Image 1 (cartoon, rainbow, N blue to C red):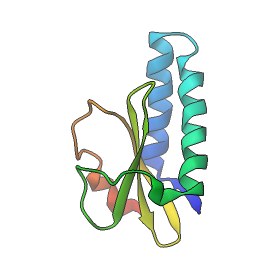
Image 2 (cartoon, rainbow, N blue to C red; image 1 turned 180 degrees about the vertical axis):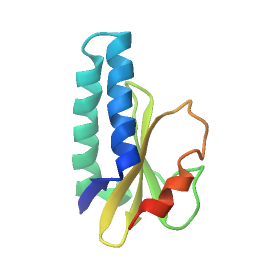
Image 3 (cartoon, one colour; image 1 turned 120 degrees about the horizontal axis):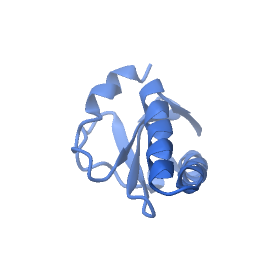
Length: 105
């Protein structure tokens, strides 16, 4: 399945890499590698990962968890693609990403 990021999620990913790299050198590159793996995994089997607990039932919202850094890659299965709507730390306020679902088209 095709996987794409909405612009806000792409910015989330950049911000996460910058924040982690400022905390410890090399961690920015490490999370970028994890994000690349997440995109491949989501594209290969998008329904394998858990539905979000803090999202609406429609569209079908799921998340890939990057355990090493405690980041959630939240995506919606929309038409014939998986659309990444947020890349947020697990401690981030739940449901803060839901407003982005209007950007699926």
